[in-house]
Image (cartoon, rainbow, N blue to C red; front, side, top):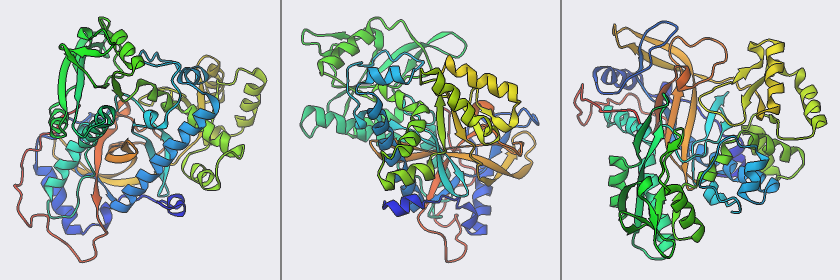
Length: 488
């Protein structure tokens, strides 16, 4: 996408542009269908509200989000390279709080490796996408359920013209196949390990987790990939430091763990590390990609703008689409720390304070919603763990119909939302959507599942409808058909 188009990119929910008859029929079919999974019970009114439609994004806007996310991911790696020549250096500079047991400390920063799998979170403010964080990780929430939801919504009205984006599951399988072809230097596939492992759940109980899922397994096999399933604890090496699982040599390992502390790896991590250092196996994605998730990188983008290190076009994209961000706690110079505190003291009402590395909106503080003393306490705590200060983004709201699952009552509410396109090898796949429910307060909120947000998705509209109402029943479709959506 051209620089001017990227700078001027605006995103709107196109639902209200659909013909009224189509919207009514869509909601009717959604209300009558079953099997959409559970929804959170809202603490404010004790009701279990069920959203009745997806967000609708025009296809050109989806491609704009793809271009924007890819551009910002590349700029993020460039910012990291200016400050750290190796991954170990970057880990130390960021004061990253979590261990990355497979990290190669001496490995240089490679953009394709660090940005291979990401799910940037964007709020929409007056139509403008505003990046809040990158979410590069070995495990990204919504990777399975998001395309399932999109396909289910598209089936409701098959003649509407609304269609799902490319599936995250299929896009990831294609990326795995490309990596195998590149490693083997031939057109056919190779051998992929989807490991199982033991990890601690949220209650502190150890349980077994599977990496393999039926959709991913099916797509991998369609790509010509031979899939091996084995426990992390059973991995070993041959005499040439090649990774073996079930006595079979492995070319590529799918890493899909995160949020669960792995226990009883049985030497599996050591085997993976050795094979990786020997160059006998590839990892998808690399665990070090989590470093780009630090929101301190957003502060570096603005530092580089101030220092004149970016091209005019990149400078414009950062200023337009990344809220102004600074980081406290990275600079070990006390004088610089105090100067930054003084600079931001009078800006409290415009700022949000966040841990540089965090999840689920934990410890996020809106300056205008807290006391001066509490705000000061948060800022001074940055000496222990880095904190970013970011200009507050006032999210646009969309009109969302809901149904109370207990009484059947329907309401419509204006709710804030987050768009999160999955980025795989620089291309966008499914779009995860989070939005609040009907009882959302009028002010700023953290749009997180832990705060009662709903997990949803987006469908694409090829063009704004111009020729009057179209019936979604044309071409058939069974009212009340079970959808079969489950969480992941």
